[in-house]
Length: 132
Image 1: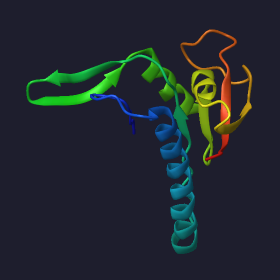
Image 2 (image 1 turned 120 degrees about the vertical axis):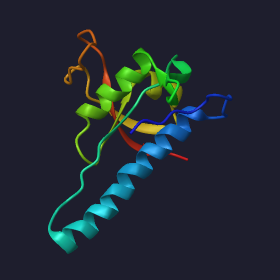
Image 3 (image 1 turned 135 degrees about the horizontal axis):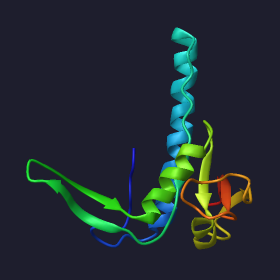
């Protein structure tokens, strides 16, 4: 699933809203997982990726199937972060960490995680908590 903030209209604190949603998804999935484990013995593990930057946003597709969506490197990087995030974790980019400095706590994973299509040295961070 993909979600984005700040389009078509600017939104106050869009990056914080994105990380709050990411944490909410992980926490909600954990609650559902507990119920599933009790009922059917299976778990639900969800990881989330959050990135920030420019994107092309608008109606895209064919006449009979049009979607309002976002595309571009920022979106692709968020998808790569999500693909690498283990269940129960939120991975963010340095752009997100810098934009929310002092408002979140995070742990740098350095360049230990290689994101497809990204140069060596791309820093991935794990979101630990939101301070507000």
